[in-house]
Image (cartoon, rainbow over all chains, first blue to last red; front, side, top):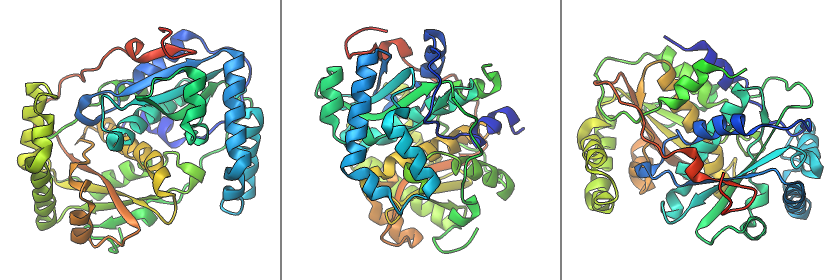
Amino acid sequence: MPDDAFFEVVLRQRACRSFESDPVGDEVIGQLLEAATHAPSAENRQPWVFVVVRRDALRDAIGAIFLRAWDSGAREHSTGRLDERLLAEVDEGARGGVASAPVLVVVCGDTEKSHPQALASSIFPAVQNLLLAAGAVGLGSALTTLAVIDRGGISTLLDLPSHIVPMAIVPLGWPSRTLGPPRREPFEAKTHRDMFGTPW
Amino acid sequence: MPDDAFFEVVLRQRACRSFESDPVGDEVIGQLLEAATHAPSAENRQPWVFVVVRRDALRDAIGAIFLRAWDSGAREHSTGRLDERLLAEVDEGARGGVASAPVLVVVCGDTEKSHPQALASSIFPAVQNLLLAAGAVGLGSALTTLAVIDRGGISTLLDLPSHIVPMAIVPLGWPSRTLGPPRREPFEAKTHRDMFGTPW
């Protein structure tokens, strides 16, 4: 039997880049991280590491790294590729929106537990669980990777050992505005039957 | 309010590598792929492509590619790293279990839509939605990447253009045995507060 409550959470997922300042307690963070750690990973090695950042100075510094990456090329790259509404939203996120979230979860991969090439397939399912779980409890969240493209900045800031690679930053907070439905192409346009080129 | 039905699906996710031969209809496959396509992606570019393989000869050929990769190094690599039970299960999966699923979904990434380096962060959240959605409707599934390590084999078999990169193969079918609970380390062991090294 299809589980409607589950599909409702999945089908309404949206990136949130603007947050209320109200705190998000340890208990709910724990619930989300428990969900994250139930994702699959290659050889069940569970190579994920989470740094839950609440301290103001650290969030500001992460925001500055994010904005530097955005202003030094990413914005230009995205202009024309994103529609204007999404571009404005991401721009607002880079200019303080993301860092305004009361919690930033820096999701890292442990290269001593998983081959670097296999790491992404073991980390992003956990990130997705974290995002979905946030949505299930009403928290806003987003999958961001911009601040970790230059992994050095985040690594130095959070004192990460060299085998712990930052791979995503997920802001968590109560949304400051209602999010509309996600915009997606129909799955049929992305699906082939048996061989590439045979329509679904 | 936490959504219990959602968390129940997430917390019981397990890899399934042994399937009944009963067919899985287009309607349920469509429901899972709709869930998959609601995952986030960089710039909302939705660079996923799904090839839904049901034809016997293709599933057999994919099974042969899987087994070749397993026998030519992966098994040896995993021996000693996996506990004996998991190793036996993966071995059984490689020796026909995975290919016995009535449906194999080959999940690919489109390098014309997303930078190859950013592709994994846009594809594996969709894969995770697919796996969770399978669990929500009672289907068995697994995240496998072994058969796509040498992308050439799958690409030739399914006639993938060069910009369509196979990234995961997800078998789908009704489980032939009841799966136990997943085994995971507690999230607290993986979580740091503000800075790496400060325990949760």
